Structure formats: C-alpha cells, structure tokens
Image (cartoon, rainbow, N blue to C red; front, side, top):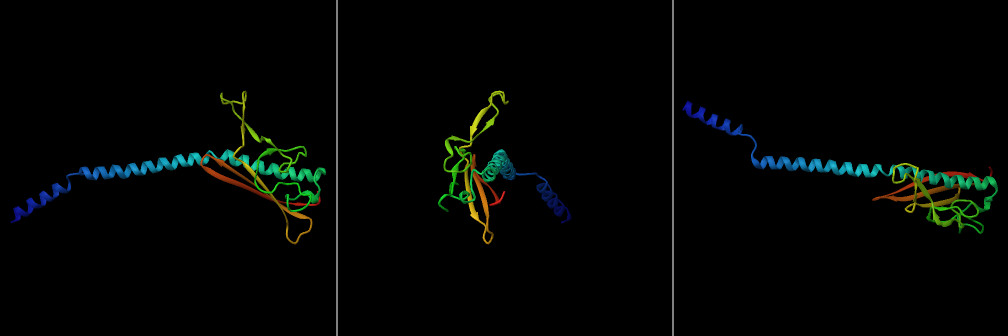
Length: 187
C-alpha cells in the first residue's frame, strides 16, 4: 500500500512541475500586450498634450497684451472712462462684445475694438524649413479667439473688472486661458 501511495504522489508531483500550458502562455502574452499598448497610447497622448505648452504661453501673452492695451489707452487719453466698456453696454463703448478673431489693432491702436483690422490675423514667427530664424515663417493664430468682458465692480464707484479669455484649439485639444484684473478711472 505504501508503494502505491508513493507512486501516486510522484505522479502528482510531476504534473505540478510540468510548466505552462499553451493556453496559459497565450493568455499571459495577451495580458502583457494589452498593458504595453495601453502605456504606448498614454505616452502618445502625453506627448500630444505636452506639445500644447507653447500655445498656452501664446494665449497668456495675448491676454496680457489685451489688458495692457486697455490700460495704455486709458493712460494716454485714447479712451475715456465712459468708453472703456463693451459695445451694447452704453452709448460710447468701444470694446467688442463676444469672441473675436485675434486681429491687428485698427487706426485707434487699441486691441479688441470695433475698428480692428481683421484682414490681418495676428501671427507669430516660427523657425523656417532649416530649423532656424534665418528664413522664418509666419504662423497665423487662426484657431485663437479673444473675448473681452468689462463690467463694473459691484459697490465700488469708478472701478471695472476686465476679463480676457483666449480660446484656442491645438490638434485635438480645445483650451482656454482667462486673465482677470481691475481698472479704475484714475491712472
């Protein structure tokens, strides 16, 4: 009886040490392939998203440029306090209401007003085909729009808030940047 028990346990031991079956190997390879492909997809998405950083910077600069234009117009006397508001909010308001293309300033030199020259879209210089600025090319910011909202600050006389929102699309990503500040009647 003892010999038969020993031969059965040896038989079980050989089966448990036989290794992987073909099905187990295929399942393991499939699980590994799904994991590797998921990581590759995540890497590709991360690189595409990281590519938007230069456009994020452009959006920040365009918003700051818009704010500076409004402050300069006030300080230089190009715009009076009664004109620093969105069209439709008063009889003499000069700033566009709603989203507009990033255009060059018109004859008044103020960004975001009704006389902006939208035949020329704002552009940036980028390296040319040789990768340097010896032969730069102009890249129009055609996917960018600017919204300037000027509203009185509740309960404070002679103080308005200015909110500039830059919306843009880079590849498959739609993004926006918002800059808010206050402006007073006094320089």
